[in-house]
Length: 182
Image (cartoon, rainbow, N blue to C red; front, top):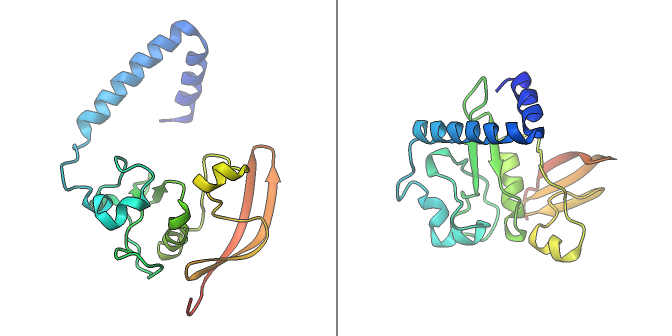
């Protein structure tokens, strides 16, 4: 969708009358996407439903299809299936599998998150939500990057090279290195 179309939609949504038209338009687009996308069959998401991987998912009903998920190669934990992470590769405008989309890591999948970044040579991570600051939320959504210094996640050391905080945005520049033994 072009930028001018997004601006038009934003303007449309502000007016109540146009909001109904936009919802109708969204419904049409959703139906079209559903028509153009092949439905998943039983077994298409087998990796996410395997017993050893169930605890790696935030929701057992939201798992990636095996044909679209990135596989991890670096041994990084105690799991029988160290290749699994709840993530999918998404095609970009110019090439296949240009982006990787994943859920916020759980405490027991922090090492898998950094393995994904390392194994797939990810240079940019964008988080579309704020990192929680209260203790209860941090147990559910643990921080996967810190503000300064070094921290170990499985076989990786994350060193924060630069941290900047702006209104509504935090920027981290990190150095990811793999330790020889852990």
